[in-house]
Length: 318
Image (cartoon, rainbow, N blue to C red):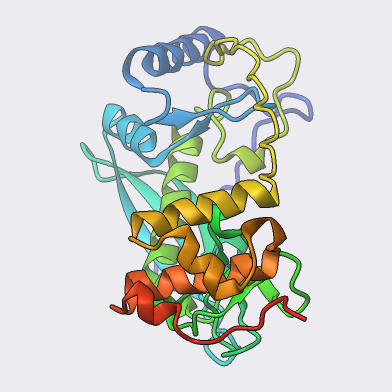
């Protein structure tokens, strides 16, 4: 025999059309003061949180989020959603992470946060690359030493050919920011970054600390004028003295520096003058390039100065 049970539907109680505040103002005020004291007494600037010029609200680091969770008896649990696309060139590594904060005393869910990180972010998608050598086509171009005329050198230690080029050589191409083709090596780093962002977001949301901290410097454009929460007092720094522009050494100065470098290797001025067939006051940048090459040969190829200056040369002669 089935017994009929009547169910009564009780309408939701409203106060007009507005939600009712569930926490007394004194409790909220006490909570804000508690967080402020926690920041000032236990968190260390530069380790637990940081600041950037132009942003009033400091941003919370992972160590600071861990201390917040420890203080409130919370432990994190992570859910990872891998959205990576390995069919693209280069691949797009993409992780969505949800961090759930659990009360250590009762095992109840207290709050959660989300975070994403992917390899198309600028700091992962690009890397700094060297210019391409027009002779050997290797990415091994470096800045030459000023005492030997500056310019560019295709560095042999990086697989280059050792060719030297003028500072304004038109065939030195590339360099700077280049597309990173090895993003797979950053998969673990990207996952950890997504987890950190989710953890910090969860800590801020669950502990209601967003009035004191933000998650990262890009997420906030400043604080409102009526924000009464104190930010760290920033020390006024003295204006930095601008260093004067270094003087570009003259050709004569660079020649004398090169001759001194050769003398340290046991090569006298007369040997080089005889090799060029003219005195130093008639040398130009082309002679300096040759001297740079000879200096490199003597230091790195185990040849004597006599052998280095034994071949014939017609540089600059008519």
